[in-house]
Image (tube, rainbow, N blue to C red; front, side, top):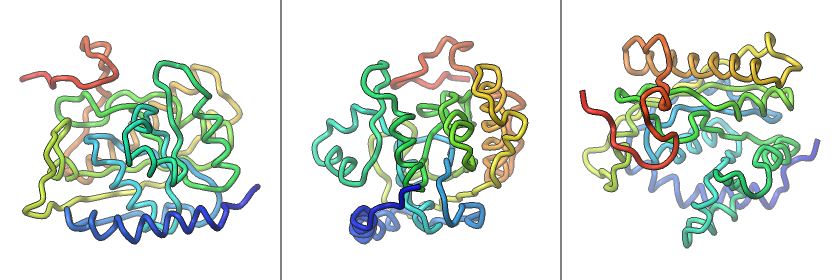
Length: 247
């Protein structure tokens, strides 16, 4: 396997030196389970997705765990001035939701060859669950792990929505929010090893989302729903902004 290039690590150190003090200004972050992050080799980490502030939280956790974080990010974000330049500078991977452009998993495969951490939000967008539990997942994270035979690490966080609410446009500076993060052990993928058929991917993805929900339940001190929220079954679009249902 190819090792990550020194200049890429230097870029991340520059970004981290500037960004982390700003990030820590917003909240008090408690991280548990960092020992589950592999010290060497490629892996996929799969978090829950509640707010647009989540990627900073996950990147912070992975960096504190001693690894270089990389994302599969919406291609449209790369067209935002300054932000797009920063994403390209740090080697993030654009994803075309319309189906156009190169296969994002193939691009992720190149990063796996460099033995990096690839962050994939299996829900694909902010959760539609009205109580902000993880919803039904997509198969990309599982497919990467099975295809390349690398660990798939579930992760959950809670409290980030106090900094930036789901689809909220205003960051909350004061008071500083408490954010809890919990990394679980690698998901046991042996029942689906060597398989990439639709049935195997669906079953493994269900297992992944259940594992994330259990971690989130521990952080929230609650029991997660028995089944994951299905946007299609509730007449919701799976992409774009939406209005949470009232109860």
